[in-house]
Image (cartoon, rainbow, N blue to C red):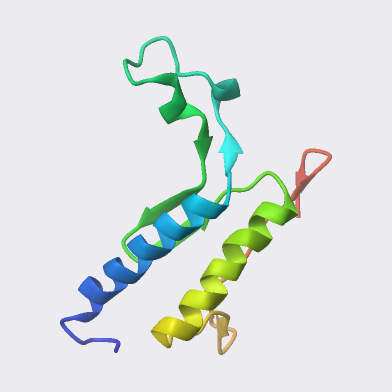
Length: 108
């Protein structure tokens, strides 16, 4: 519940579990053509794709095609039912779910 001292911890548990599940089922976007930058010492496999970004209770999924988006959305829909959370737009005042698609270099 909003304002409950346990809410931040509960949100972190929910978001972390969604991050893991989405990462297991969606590919994400390729970065640096799948190769690690020369200045970085991490194995190249670490730099190949970014599936999602998270900060506090915000989540941003990154996908190259609609099928990957659908795979992630299916997981979110399942978590919505399991956790009792609701995805959507709250009274048209706060966007909780949105998306952007690039077509010919233009965001829509």
